[in-house]
Image 1: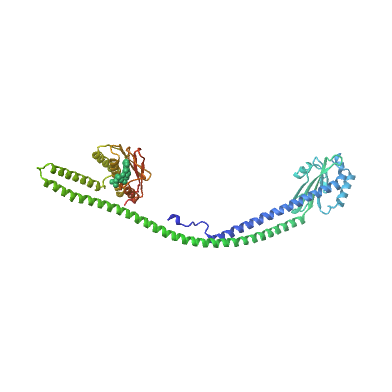
Image 2: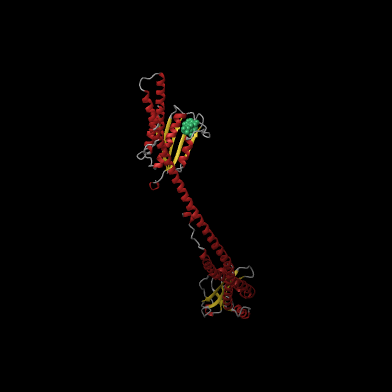
Length: 454
Ligand SMILES: Nc1ncnc2c1ncn2[C@@H]1O[C@H](COP(=O)(O)OP(=O)(O)OP(=O)(O)O)[C@@H](O)[C@H]1O
Ligand SMILES: [Mg+2]
């Protein structure tokens, strides 16, 4: 039973382990990401504020002694001396490792490395930024620059524009390198601290969540156990139901076949009993009959004919070798012979093979429907149609007779019996009729595959 299988996705046993694995992964990634993000933000803040301080220092302290650059691209010895004095005295003097003063044309107007003074060196992104008016700052843990000498020192690089006090034009660029040993240490400490904080918070959250998950996991296990018990119960019930349905079906088949046997026996009894007695009575009447005897003989003949008709209706021919098409054709022909009316046939050539029980049912359906036409719609045109669609066989008999109220079947037993007989084979009977609009009686039966036929 497919629908009773329990789904095996996410077994609750693995829920906790799965959660811990995922929570651990998220914790480590979260710690790394947040740690690096925090240090990058601190670094950004520190470099920006260093840039601002430097710009102020340049404006307030350096700018006044290098205004000469507004007139040319070199400083007079007097101003160079003043600049050196300022650099030696200024608030940043202990921190500045390297200092250069550039002209807007890229020439070194001053450098603490005398070999570079007066030379035009290649442009750099920092120089270009400062020449376009902004303060450029950059922090590098392992800085390499020809001016510093020792490689691998953490440095803060700053390019700050120097403006003319007259019109604010950029007349030069001050380039600083300040040692940032402390900053590198601060950043490393901040990173470790943020990792620790994030780690602890995530751990606490994971612990709280694991408690919730463990509780949930226990509930799921409990519910699964009760669900399993219910499913087992249901499956037993479903098996019982299937067994009962099978027994009902078998009983239906047995009753139908017993019914046919009974009808056959009644037919044989009628034929061998009353018909023989009547035949004997007719024989005893002899030939020299007066008027009265002739009346009796006619009554006996009619009675014998009626009983024979009844017998032929009751007894079922051997349908083993009859297909559904043959059944329909023979009954239509018999109807024509009996009533003198023509029965039109609408039967496709490729009908499926039906079970013996289904063939008996179709035979009785056609017999009753055609009998009803003869009885209740004499002289009407009749048509027998058969069609097979998907796994359903449809058989119908229609006439253009007077029709009737299908909710009032009177005392007749024919249609009621048919409905039961068809339902016993998991089919259904349909009556389409109205007063004055003819009658169509149809039955639909499932077509069973070969393996399902009994
Ligand atoms: N083709 C038909 N045309 C008009 N009326 C019909 C037709 N078939 C059935 N009926 C009406 O439906 C009623 C019920 O039909 P049903 O076959 O059950 O009983 P019956 O034919 O009267 O008797 P029984 O079949 O028991 O010999 C009939 O009495 C008749 O009034
Ligand atoms: Mg009838």
